[in-house]
Image (cartoon, rainbow, N blue to C red):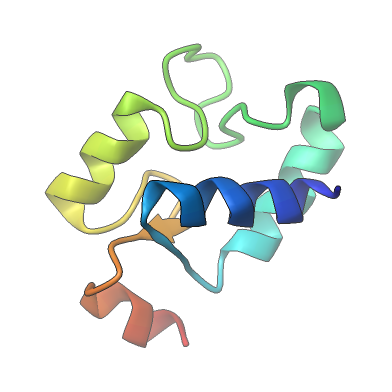
Length: 84
């Protein structure tokens, strides 16, 4: 399973929707961290508490409608329409 597929699966399981930015973030994760640490956040890689669908990520989505990396959003968010 590719990092992109893992990200989409985790997003769906959490009840969120990926944005158009997910492919760019998946490529960054592949280059920066590889498969073993794919969940790390490329935008905040030194923060162990921030990773895909972490509590920080969920908090960003609930508060701002989108995560820190602009990768995941609420299903009813206006951000989805802008990303499409």
